[in-house]
Length: 282
Image (cartoon, rainbow, N blue to C red; front, side, top):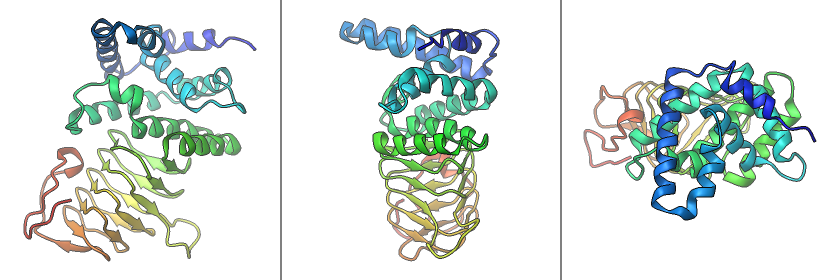
């Protein structure tokens, strides 16, 4: 089997990273060095995952391939696929960097880049979906489906390859998340675990939710049908949403209803769970 070292050379040579990706790479390398120094038992892992690579794109491609390879498509084969996607669609790298910044800024349990890059299921699943999305739109449907299946099996996250995902997205925990084929998730959205962005099961075509910028979706929420959740909205934990949600409002309950007053912030960025009005918390 041929080596793909030459392919990865394109990612560190001809491929010019965005300023955001370059900054993330500097932080990632610094944190990997510090982790190795603090615990020598981690030195080999830090070298393999981060420090032996020449760029954020290289390290990310290797991490995705390592997580999702199996006996059907091994690491080298999958790595070659990922490299092709990253070279042809460099916005994937910029989006991944924005996702890591989002996690560092919004997750109170994490103040670094290294841990989500290595271990967070939501982050890794989203980057795998970005590769599958590229494959889907280049008529490599079965390979995209294969990646979707592997992401679901390994990481417990099921995002259809055709779903359109923005950047600066935090999939907190990730476990049990399901996002359907015609769903749209815009920039700066935060989604907690066990959320479904699904269809009602009755219709075909464009049948999944459109989540606009800066939305916060609480754990266990179900948003069903081709409905819009407006910019800056909050969806309470465990809610079932079957009607459109106006911008800058909060909805809770089964079925979900508007509660409290409108607000002006983007809760997907601020992670502010409280609702102005009755004693509701997302």
